[in-house]
Length: 244
Image (cartoon, rainbow, N blue to C red; front, side):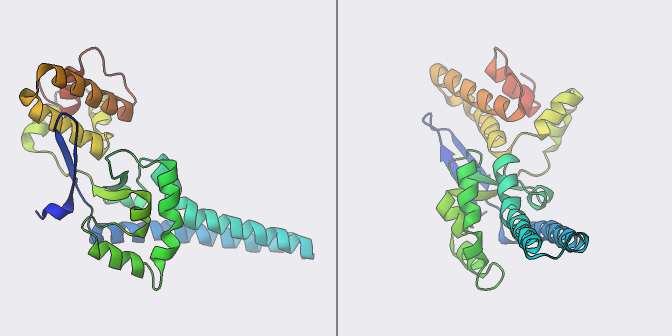
């Protein structure tokens, strides 16, 4: 695989976490799905606006009020759609979730509200001169496939890991249904951190190993909304579906 297609972050303990950058194809198809949802929303708003005009007097003040509401609703659908999912739904719009890609900060952290706002404010520029013409050109030239919004916000779109290896699947069967469900919800960045730690922990000094285990377990537990317990490494092994 081309090294330009991966994002790598190194911790102070010299443990590297990396994940695959989403390609143009998956991002385009995910965007088409999202555009379909947005189109349906716009159509519903226009129908509601037309029904409102039919139901109220056509006085100037009524028409102006409805026009203002229409513009606000269209703005929220066009700009707020992606902003909402990227800021409050783990960086995944419905289209991105379908194709297993996600927006994250370049340092591996979840996409924050300010980053999502900046990323989507520049969507208007990325859209020009033809639908996402600027975005396509910039993404093609950038090694990490970032558009202008990503460059300004410090974000990158990554691909979630695919199907687990047979051994991992067999180990996962030993988990309870609740644990398997929790594991499936682990974001790709935290999943990569857990995997990298468990693979490299024997190379770390005891103090660094304990400190890094607590850090990674805290990140994973926060992502899953659970308590890691007194033994961070045992918790990480359970998350990965491995036996001690």
